[in-house]
Image (cartoon, rainbow, N blue to C red; front, side):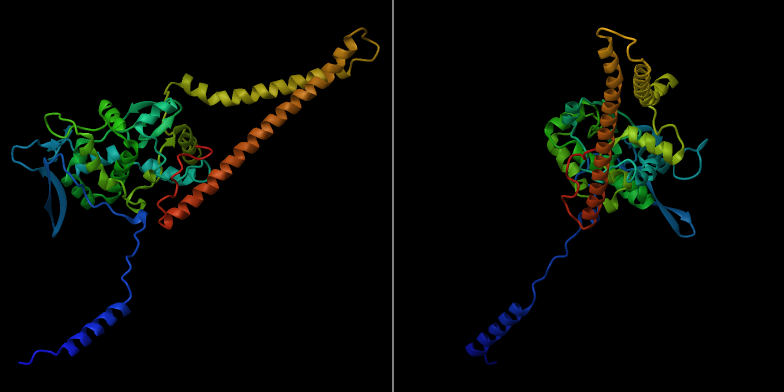
Length: 385
């Protein structure tokens, strides 16, 4: 068999090279940040659970959490009150674990209020509006640990509520179970964990979180995570896109006073959450702005009364220095009323301008996020926050 000549071999190489040059380069399709999905845990610290399928009849199945080992704990890690097996007596039908998780992690109430707050109580839709734990003290805020999902990262003057991470979030089987049982609940849990990526940005934040018991131990002996292990665990949640997160966690910290007003106008409720459940405290906070308005009106009315009284004083009825006092009594109330009008006008115009600026910026951020802009909404806060 004759070997190919050097001339034909070189010709073949030239043709192949020309074809390679003519082929257009492969371009990677950019992935928009709000479409980035959750790929699962990178590391697992709780391996007590296993997600299995059980038959329901008619060829249907559903996922169920069971203990991985025969002698394993028969309850949800970190919550001995919630057994993995359905209670035999006194329990409603259905998935009791799913019901418990919905109660502990669903933010449906806030999800319904936030569209209303977009136009009335301006909030910029950026999950980066979260202050790290160590910096909360710089804002004179006291951290209140709560298990209420609707209060996580909600602040009220000198306090902020933070929900701790449950131990079962460290389990891969738990996330598999959520993916197959309730996608909306899974979105809420993913948003919750993404918020912790912003809360714990430095080792000092991690130490503060451990001190407040916001992070559960990684094993049954109560051993805590190291900062390196935490960074490895939280990494998959860092870039989960907004399309895979529920509406509440498109936002960062929320102001409770605004949520209370939104609940009042939207649902007719006195408040979304009462910090002070007693009527005396509630009326004190509610009536304060009303009393302020009455005080301003009282000053204006008194000024008008003084001016009118000075007008009716007839010339020649007073002598000495009193005519000057009467003149001052006539014009000083006018100056007071003009000063009050100027202050109120400046305050209202300023607040209106800042509100409009934040509304425009909020819509601008939404448009940028839809285009996949990573830097959309990275400013720490708006003019009215």
